[in-house]
Image (cartoon, rainbow, N blue to C red):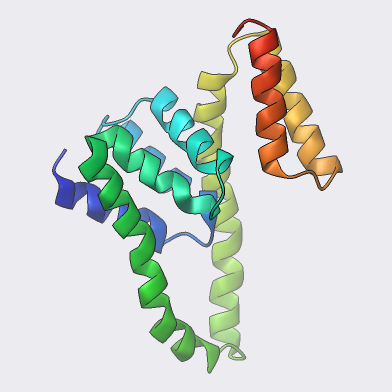
Length: 171
């Protein structure tokens, strides 16, 4: 894949997301569904790699770039991840002065549920690819319950899931 195209696609995803994994639906659609640059499994691996280590939740974009185009792709992912941070400063200054306007508040309140729906739409195909039997289904269910019912860190859930997968002989 052309590195400039990869950067622009990843930039579109990171610039239109609110945090971390909300860029996932755009990346899934552009790189898995439309262009078939990544497989569902590679996208799953990129998300796990990005969420397993320290740093921001959106860091998985660097792994996506790596899976798409090696080290140069990882650099494009990093640049795409950093660019919105530099652009948000003037935008926040502009919108911050106008945040009390009903139109601005209404637009923000309208986009948040749309982002939640997009995230669910991108997550379901990844779940279908990852949940291949009873052990993965049990891991998924236990992880969901642990994250909903407790304040356990995502890293511990991933570590425990890896341990269960290892003990189960990788299913």
